[in-house]
Image 1: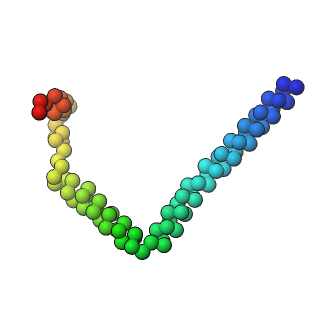
Image 2: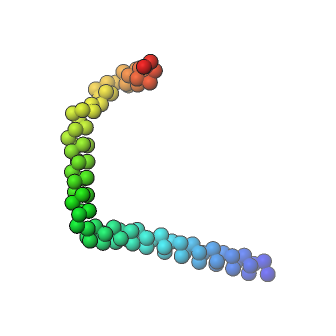
Image 3: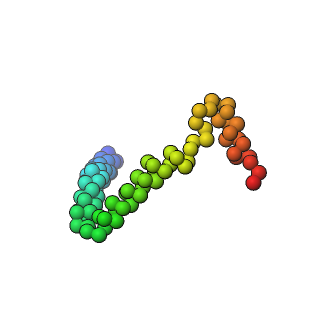
Length: 92
């Protein structure tokens, strides 16, 4: 009797696991399809997204290297550690 109850529990667990795995395999495709259809139907939103992407490109590709230099570049390990310690313990 115990063996059949245990077997039924294992079969039930395997069935649940199979359903979960099938659902997990399907949802990424559904999410991609949802967003693709939404972007295809956009008119004004598409223009706004292009503006956002251009601004992000300008900020990260063009402005970052010029205005936000890496203070640790060109230093060895000890110099980097000293610089970090100085910045963390600086009294402001």
